Amino acid sequence: MTKPVLEVKGLHKNFGALQATKNVSLDLKPNEIHALIGPNGAGKSTLIGQIAGWITPDAGSIYLDGEDVTTETVASRSRKGLGRSFQVSSLAMEVSARRNVMLSVQASQGSSFRFWKQTKSDQELRETAGNWLKKVGLGGREDIAVSELSHGERRQVEVACALALKPKALLLDEPMAGLGPTGSVQLTEFLEEIRPEIPILLIEHDMDAVFRLADRITVLVGGAAILSGSVDEIRASALVREAYLGE
Ligand code: ADP
Ligand code: MG
Image (cartoon, rainbow, N blue to C red):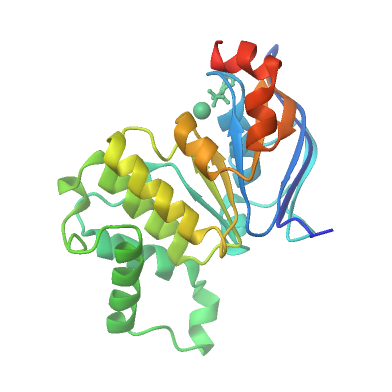
């Protein structure tokens, strides 16, 4: 059996009396897009927050490449290869898209590292950042300030920042939100392109994108993972039709 890149076991999180995630276990294998779907308030963002590290679980464990990272900080998980993109606010608005990606690359090179190992030259960094921006569909827009970019373009910059760190796994929370039809199709094609290199745990409401992209789907309802299976299995499930698709 293929070893998972990311494994989550029995994650529990309460907010007061509310059980936001209940004993959730799932994994992400190489070359896979694993979609997480469920109605608003199902606990999807709470789950991904625990995996990324800014929400502390009440119980359960998280393994990255077989290593237990449950008690590690967000920054440490990120250095160990957990990439994420869903906080547009983390971009520096007044500088260019390119500079944002460069900052992200620089931030990933720890300072102690810099003492004894030559860091990339500014020119090299500029080119690398430009290449990532082209890959996400922002060719020609590299040197525009983020404040001048559209909502969708900012999301593309975020994804470029995440990818520039060469993550082992990528967490995406509703990357299609606010993109419009053309943007969604572009991003869908792009995610298909990177899947062989970087497996993705994808939270997404756009069901066309989910059904096109997902190798596996897990359905979260009321904090619990009620079902997991292939696109065909999930589509055929009466439970999902009732609980989620509203059919
Ligand atoms: P989803 O992403 O599936 O829409 P969330 O994980 O954001 O769901 O939220 C799950 C439940 O937890 C919701 O009822 C939400 O109101 C609640 N919740 C989320 N974050 C907090 C918080 N920081 N404090 C209290 N309740 C929260
Ligand atoms: Mg959410």
